[in-house]
Amino acid sequence: MSTSTLPSAAPGAPRIVAPVLDVVVPVYNEETDLEPCVRRLHEYLTAQFPYRFRITVADNASTDGTAAVARRLAATYPAVESVHLPEKGRGRALKHVWTHSDAAVLAYMDVDLSTDLGALLPLVAPLISGHSDLAIGSRLARGSRVVRGAKREFISRSYNLILRGTLAARFSDAQCGFKAIRGDVAERLLPMVEDTGWFFDTEMLVLAERAGLRIHEVPVDWVDDPDSRVDIVATALADLRGIARLTKALGTGSLPLAALREQLGRNPLPVAGVPAGLAGQLIRFAAVGAASTLAYLALYALLRTGAGAQWANLIALLVTAVANTAVNRRVTFRIQGSDGAWRHHVQGLVVFGIGLGLTSGTLALLQAVATPPTWVELAALIVANLLATAARFLLMRIWVFRAAHRP
Image (cartoon, rainbow, N blue to C red; front, side, top):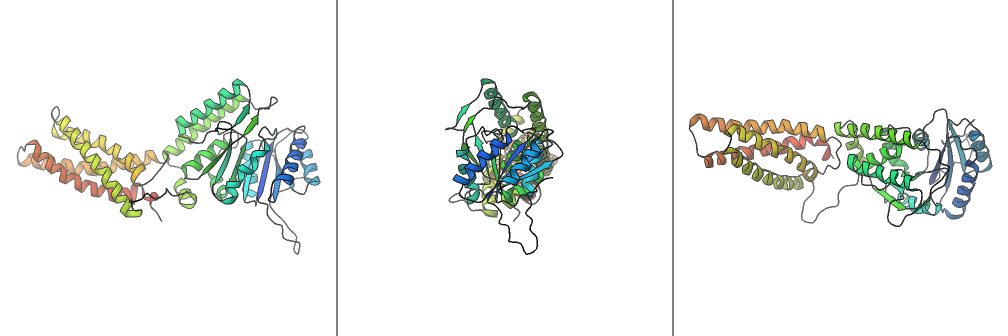
């Protein structure tokens, strides 16, 4: 027997008002700690939280008396509900409850209540106001007060350094069991999150960051639970597999983050004197193009002294084309993160092939007629590069980076 988070009412019954906040407590074999956790949390929210709330106990396949304790608590407190899932996985439990909840803001915390509850209102307030999309408690932020052993401190900091190096994550603490998300954001973001275990949090935050969502961080007071049952080695290996899987997915562009960015992402702040839209893209593209052309000509002139014209042109154009695609991706079309980068560079090489055809064709034509001096070659290449630049902008806008400017 379980209580669903979906609101239900008989015909003619009073309308059930959805809570502003739904706090999920995911548990597995926590029959001893669950009741004092929920009682303390309920007491705090009743006394300190100014909005309607719900506490949902998400029991993911416990084999002890956890489910019975959860049902008893749900029968005792009207604001407490219980959900029983037949399969293990903290991420699976959170995704199930958050997906079916009718609350405006969804949060979760660990059953040991290691994080001081005084940080709960600062955590969810920016989400209630609409200022931010997700919020995390951070044990590594300035102002946090943390009590834990050296081993866990080392593991936590190492993990976050790995995230910064592999996934370019900018949030400071991925593993703190104290997070929240807006309900409308969860509805669109969670279907993309594949992990059902401990990597769920990290995957959700990385995808949110890549989609241009705003993540609010709250420094917390946190005391380590010495009776934690988390298998550190197994969790670390699962996290490394998750990082590898997510890196591959972002690199191949298989995730529809562009669509999510269009729906929920926050646009960059306007810069004075730089127009937006097509005009702004043209200005930025022209600046990047001018720098690329100068770099191309300098590299061509340098290589021309030791190689033939065609080889010098090929190498100079290839090097500057790769750099040009990377800079235009970030500067001209405002694409952040690495999702889709491989696909963009492959398409950029196709565009490079068109430019190579124009410039190589120009050189071939010149050399077929006569043996021109270097300054004539350079002048002809400038004209050919202008034509190639116009074609490059058109192809980048309507093909390579089309999702960046779609209305």
